[in-house]
Amino acid sequence: MSERGGPTVPQSPGDITPAWLTAALRHGGALGDASVVGHSAEPIAEGRGFMNRLFRLTLDYDPTLDHDADPSGLPATVIAKLPSADPLLRTIFEGLRQNRREVRFYRELASNHHLPAPRCFHSGLDSATGNSILLVEDMTHARQGDSVAGCSMYDARRAIVQLARFHASWWDSPRLDELDWIPLKDAESGVYQAIYPGAWASLVEQAGNGMPQVLRRLGDRLRRDVPRIKAHLTKPPRTIVHGDFRLDNCFFPTGAHSRSPVVFDWEFCVRGRGVCDVATFISEAFPSRQRREAELALLETYHSVLEGNGVNGYSFDQCWRDYRMAMLEAFVFWIITGGYCNFAGQRATVYLHNTLARFDAAISDLAVTELLAG
Image 1 (cartoon, one colour):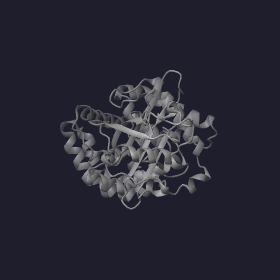
Image 2 (cartoon, rainbow, N blue to C red):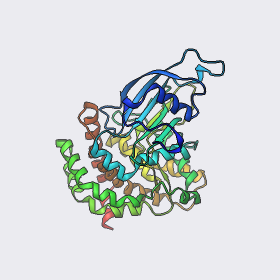
Image 3 (cartoon, rainbow, N blue to C red):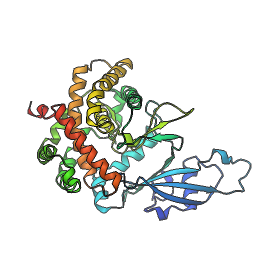
Image 4 (tube, helix red, strand yellow):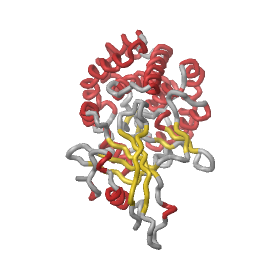
């Protein structure tokens, strides 16, 4: 059963039928009087280290549309997002309630123009089973970021500027208290500590020789510091943090379309210090040498845009300190969310090893562990 009177939430791709798509798209206001009479489903993001199931659905419509239906306005393709079929991953992420978060984000907050999200044609949630589905815009007119290939300073700056504008729009806003379905960052400390041992052991096993030894020693002892890290990054000033702001989740429009990146995967949004998103992005966007050359300028850009959009009382020194702590938080997040992912594919394996090497260098360069000793 779906909430809000929509069609039943499918449990698997096989439950997505033309009749279901017609009902879902009509419920979301995207279809009018047209009908879906057929479709094909193509798995996407396999071998990229993603946790959910993603499919590109190509839709066929009734060719005998009446005069009120405009076929040119109907989506030719949509992206369907369902939770993982892996029982272990489902158990872990139901504990984090991340799919429930994302459904509510699209229903209540996705219209914020400062950091555009894809258009959502339908969102469905079965609160009894935790099953969910999103039908969102297929960004065929945009170029997806690639956390393995990295990005240019131009694209990085575009992403950071839009991120800062979004953060500024929610900065210490009284409206944040109304969003009790978005947890404070430190509210997840207990769940993270419970998941950590198994996730870390799995990540170490999958990484094999790709796990840097210094990072291995840090990961072995980091579980006890999770509450302290999260508590620091939950202190005011707070904003809405995307939570997984990385290149793979950014689409850069091309041609005549908007210059603002469109950002997917809002299931880990939290309330806390916005610079967490900056650290997540920079940690994956560049190899270590390029990160060293780029990060100060990008952080200065972020801070300057905050100030230019009305944020006061947040010094650059504090921003820099928060950035350093956030790099450690990004590593913890990677353990929790990536520990049980399947990195068996060639691209996913490269992604895993690249990310671990970049975290190892960044945590060392930024002397992050000194913050835990202080």
